[in-house]
Image (cartoon, rainbow, N blue to C red; front, side):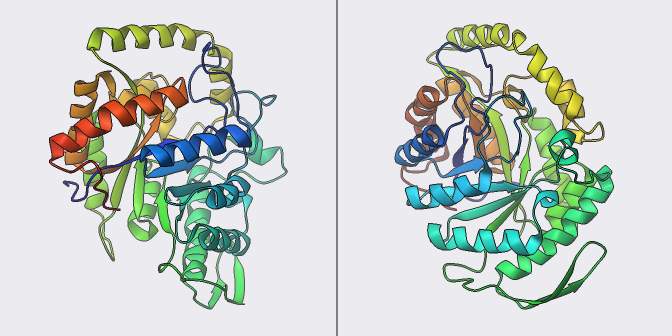
Length: 359
C-alpha cells in the first residue's frame, strides 16, 4: 500500500511524565496537567496534527509516580486547543460502552469534531486486577473488546442500540447530541496480534503499528490490507522515538548518551515487564529490537541527521504510513527541533507545500 495523503505528525502527551529515561537532566519527570496542556498547545502552534493521550490508571514504570488520566485530560484539552486531533486511548475493561460512548460524544462536542478513540485491549495486569476486575486471557480480551466497540460505534453514530451479547445487554439506548460535526469520531486500534488485525479490519479506521524496521511494517500493512473489509481502506499510523541532529555523528552520540541513561532505568523496565501479559505480541517484538522509548521507540530508525530522518519518514510514508506518532527527550525542545528541521524536509521531498495537510 502507498499512502495517498500527505503525512501527518503527532506527539505523545506526557501522561507518564517522560517517554524515555527518568534520569535525563533536562527532562524531569512531570505528568502534570499543566505540563501536558502546555505541551499540546505548543504542538498545535508548531503545526502538529495529532496528540495521543495514552491510558493507564497507575504508572506501569513505578506505582509511586504520577499518571495523568486520559479522558478528563482529553476533555480539558478539547477546551484548550482549536485544531489538533485528540486521540484518547481506551481500555474497554475499564469503562462500560454506554458510559464511554457518552463521554466521547461530549468531548466530540467540546472539541467540535476533533476527538478520536484509540482502542487498546490492555496488557498491564496490576492496574486491572488490583481494582478487582477480571483480566481475561488474550483472545477473550479481544472478544470482549470487539463486542464493546460494536456498541460504542453505533452509539456514536447516533443509532438506537439494542444489543444482547456474551458480555453486554443494552436495551434501546440512544445518545444525543450525536453527529453534529461528522458521522462519528475516528477509531484507531492498537495491538499487533491476529485478533488486533481482525478488529481493525472489521471495525477500525486506523491501525497503530509499534516502531520497528520498515520491512516489518510493510508486511504488517499487507496482512491487514489482505483482510476482508467493508468501507474505506484502513489507514496506518506508526509510533516512533526521534533523535535527530544536524549530522549523523552528533545524532549517534546522543543515542549513545541516551542508552547510558536507559541503563539507569532497568528497575522500572523490569517492573513493566513483570506486570505485562506474557501473550502480548508487542513485547515479543520489542525483545527482538531493543529501543529507547516505548512502543518500539527508536526501532523505527528515526535516528540520524535531519536529512536522514526526513528520508526515513518519506520511506515509511510511501510504504503506507499516514500518521507518525512521535516521542522525544527532552520532549519540548526536541519536538520543536523536529517541527523546524525535519517536517519541512519531508514535505519538500514529497513535493508538498509546508502548509498542506490532508486528514
